[in-house]
Length: 390
Image (cartoon, rainbow, N blue to C red; front, side):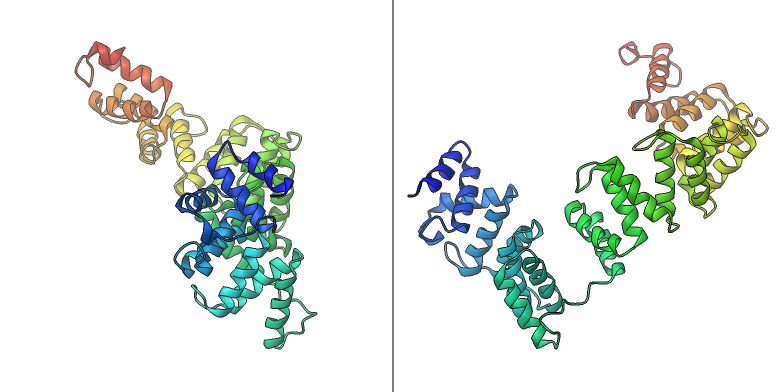
């Protein structure tokens, strides 16, 4: 056994799954002789554990085991599954073999275009067999070997990326959105900004988030315009600039985007980036509230509750609080409870007050928790219970 091999195996002694990952690396690098057929059950189990832990080379090796039947019963669909996992992490051997299986319909429905895509990925990384497979495939379809296949349309890449994002497969979504974004797809650019913003499938990076939001925003994407406004309003990744925040909120709000309408309402309510104007705040809150935006509904309820920018109207306050409260908005639940406790806009109903306090309290709303404790303390709307009050 060569020293390099010994070093690998010494490194894996402490964790069994790591040992089998390293065995996979050694086998893949051609450092060991023999085959999985000579392994016992513990070796195969170890390889599976390493693969399940996300080691790409182990995923490839496990795919080979099921592909060839060398070490386990042949199972081509299972081989495809593990090749896909390794290929998605950039393993060129897995990408090439997955392409071959898609080309030939082995363990998976035959799909020449997907096969070509995997061959291209592996060939781009310098894997020679993939280059040969790609040239042969292109020759058969009349595409010259020297001419790459036509890039996948940005709209298709975006749709595939959205499907992967919805499935919470963020690394795959990020890759697909990146390709679509480079082709100028505004939706993909907006998603890239959001993924950089939140560290989904990529390291969190405010500067990249800002850059991609801006690209999408300049094309009129309302979500990107709103998120760009938020970054300016909070000073995230850029110097705080309320005027810029208002400008971007307005561009999206004028297109009917409720999140931006709510954000613009906040700016008018607080006099940030615009002169303070409660009537304008009410107007923008209402636009968003009418579209079901819970925070806007709660804010509009509060404006009616205290008579700010609109005539005081407890019945309207209760109506808007209720719409937000039924969507789970904790502050709206608390404020609705206060109206029931005091008989404002609704008939006084201590049981209803306690019920809404409880809903808000269960979400961690501190004032609701204190109020519910008080209700138990004096037995109002609930049976008196000092233990619950405490």
